[in-house]
Length: 153
Image (cartoon, rainbow, N blue to C red; front, side, top):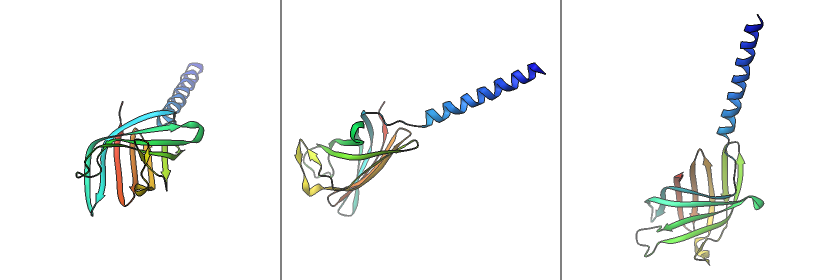
């Protein structure tokens, strides 16, 4: 009977440890620093979706202020755009809800090369990071934009 009780107790302990490990693995902590994502960006231009694959976005989280700077690396928003630019959206609010990291902002002036671009004021930014994926929606001025990408390891 003692042997059966010991086996039963060990099984319960193993089951409890196993469920704790699963919870810890499923919960993403917001860690300071830069995380890069690669995916597809879609901009609505003249009523049409303009899709650009292989876009890299960096999310630079600042723990002290619970904000992040989002950097769109070397992007052309439409094919007619003559050059690719690095566009930064600073001061995006960051919150955590369980294993999901939430991003939000409104009325932020983006910059390119340190130059502010008021005519492309960012509005309605919302997004999340979950299970290694970044999903983001926002408008650059009158251009609705969305991104879906996976974390670059």
